[in-house]
Image (cartoon, rainbow, N blue to C red; front, side, top):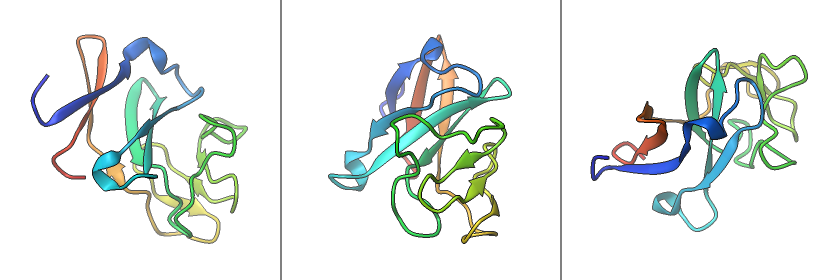
Amino acid sequence: MASNERLICQSDALVEKSHGLRFELPELGEFVTGFAVRYNSVVYAYINQCAHVPIELDWNEGDFFDLSKNYLLCATHGAHYNPTDGYCVMGPCKGKRLKSIKVVERNNEILISLDDL
């Protein structure tokens, strides 16, 4: 693990199109979290803030996908985001994006890069 990376979980903790994993981001402030999900076998990570109003997306911890399991959902505003790029396709922030976090999966571990936070 490079010094600019931080382990957030083991690979098997993220199941395809299932619960995501929340993690603290003390680098961005005391109450800022991020989340990671697995979609089409790839891990994606974002800052856990809606592009409409900066509140966390999940009411129930780890529930980021909508019922179809094809979009990330803001439980407060109903905004729908593409899991692959964080682009809002429906809702009050249509056309905006979630803030992505560089993530890598290596040696059965999922790590985030701290360089671009």
